[in-house]
Image (cartoon, rainbow, N blue to C red):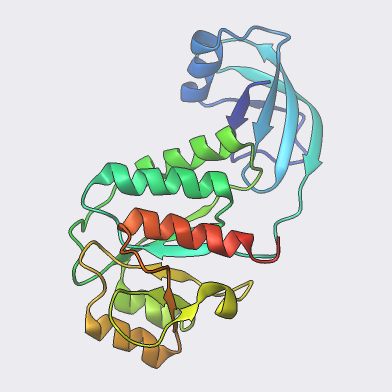
Amino acid sequence: MNLFYVPELAPDLSGITLSEEESKHACRVLRLRTGDKVILLDGRGGTYTAEIAEDHPKHCKLHILDYTFEEKPLKEVHVAIAPTKNNERIEWFLEKATELGITEVSLLLCKNSERKLIKEDRFEKILVSAMKQSQRTYLPKLNALVPFKTFISEHPKGALAHCYEGSKSMLQDVIQPQGYPLLIGPEGDFTPEEVALAGDSGYDFISLGKNRLRTETAGLYACMLAISQGN
């Protein structure tokens, strides 16, 4: 069945009207008609089976038939990453990380960042599309772009990957299930000052292997390592 994301859903609702964009997609693109059944996701663990009651391309009305709830995963996978200069690369990361099971994404503005402006609505749509594609019931949380120093002050512990020499741990040896973001820097890496700030705050420095990885590759690899722990 076709999937639709409807964040305003609630378990006590008996019916709902799709947004104009989703109504158009359902009735004109997918050509769904009255009586057809669809699956609705609220992005918070709820899955709803619904039947089209009125197949209008601007306000498609649905009758909710069934509701199930999936508990939120106990393990958080939070990657804080500097957006890449090429927007397609960070969008690729967002899509693939969502499919794999990331729970939260933060966007970092670093000294060496080449992209200082982002389109949050575009990124949000990518997360929604990937959630539907992978049939996840939870939409990853997307946090606004913040300066590196601000992020460190709000998240005083975690893991940071950098390319400088020095002692580094393997992620699987230090990772914690909650409150432990994984920081990935921009194309020019974190500055020594940023690395020192994170270290003074209590961050672990981690290795992602001997090869130097692109920002989006490093982010996805860290995500995969975090997800694999305990599975």
